[in-house]
Image (cartoon, rainbow, N blue to C red; front, side, top):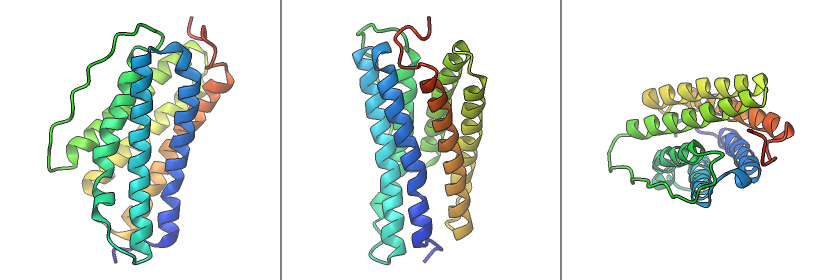
Length: 205
């Protein structure tokens, strides 16, 4: 065993739930401000990120219970989440423009290292949070901006931990706590914007 316990596996579902709530709020509030193509990217990207997180947490549960080492569930997280975050970011680029012109998305090239996926994940979430921060600025919600900045900083920490991961128990706990803070800050920022009227069609005008 590599130090993975059942409590650790259960805790790993927390950032998954936090992201799911954030994604649902954003999709409901931004639906009337996006083209169908952009909204499809947002939905698809959110689903990919969510599934990637569920796969990883499920692998830990199976591993901790000594049922099996379902390797595919473990290794599929980055290939799922990295392009997922990029799709979420690209969906927000045209936020406010309801033109039905679709964005062309190139499939990521095959690569044996996780580094490229870590980079995509950081860039995707960072781009998403940058755009959300600009919209929060228009809504005069500086606390939301602070939350997005904190979320991005801790996501950078996740990227660093991913590049140095040694599969130890302490590293797993550190990564989970870092991810919880990142996704928690994202959710708080999204909820602040939601309560301030993000769902209104003319909120950014």
